[in-house]
Image 1 (cartoon, rainbow, N blue to C red):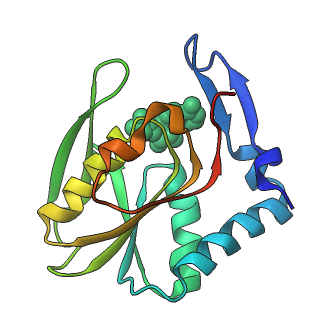
Image 2 (cartoon, helix red, strand yellow; image 1 turned 180 degrees about the vertical axis):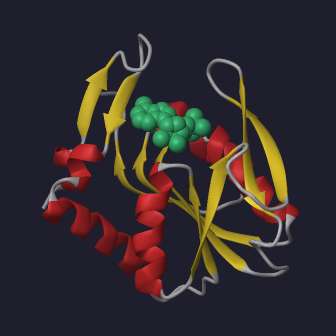
Length: 173
Ligand code: AMP
């Protein structure tokens, strides 16, 4: 089962020049979806993890399956304005303008080991903001995991000092 072949690429979406890597085609294929979740599970089964932080919105899908399989808690890192309780907020820049993401301030306890997960790492700006949120609350980021990595955009450099893991890479294509 090659899960990379199940990911659809949409050129020039949402804006010209972007090759959008669409994981909906991976998820609608039950063999590919299971394979992706199983590979993530195998990587983290023996690692000491207290909670999984999934990034809004596609990080919720893989993150919650993994949290269930690992029998650990799941915490949603959400776009601003969605969480009902007290939050901590982090600003980050996108290709056009800025965005903010938030975590409930009681989502992480001091010293907890947190795995951060999203569907894709491009420049790394989004996940770095999530790392900052976890650390603001006293958590320790054990790794950042992705289904897809775009190495050309050098997201790993933004995450220097933090382990990064990805299932599939699209490089120069
Ligand atoms: P970045 O902060 O640049 O690492 O962007 C990562 C976030 O934007 C992830 O939540 C992705 O879902 C989304 N994203 C960025 N670039 C792409 C792309 N080429 N294809 C699909 N999703 C993308």
